[in-house]
Length: 239
Image (cartoon, rainbow, N blue to C red; front, side, top):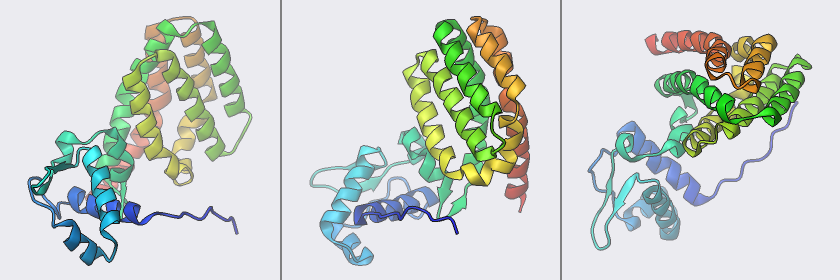
């Protein structure tokens, strides 16, 4: 039996997750005032400092509007939240949200080729060496989870070379949402991460500084699994 690390979560983490779920699921609507710290502590059976810490974290992520001496109100997360919320939106209460998953896939397919084009323009010869080593490692294993990890390392190098802080932060958030599901996604992602030849073509285009070929090659790498996953998600949404 494979053992998993024991996850120890703090009380403020639990409070944060419960209040966040209420906000995201509509139990607490935008503009609605939260109960007092004392009342929340009573309902949740925790200390007021734990509630206070959780609410401060939510305020830092722009999910709450905290006014000194006034009520703490809920903000519309669709307008104010950042990409750091994405992993929490993707899986809520143990279930995948197909709409969020679809938006991640669509963003990946749109952004990935553009990032590859920038990497081709800015990367240089050192990048080609790193990408070649990563693709060699990808081609040397038949394990679909390991292949996904090598593919993530490949794109990590590409994003670095693109030299864009916005794309870097986007990649970090998308990766944080994706990594916990590596094993579950292995059968579907096998089609993408098994395209060693396509990855080599993309590597060559980036190494040659050919932005347009890199853009097309990146689309070729990303599109098959994206199409398959979108089809599967559509079936989930129809249930």
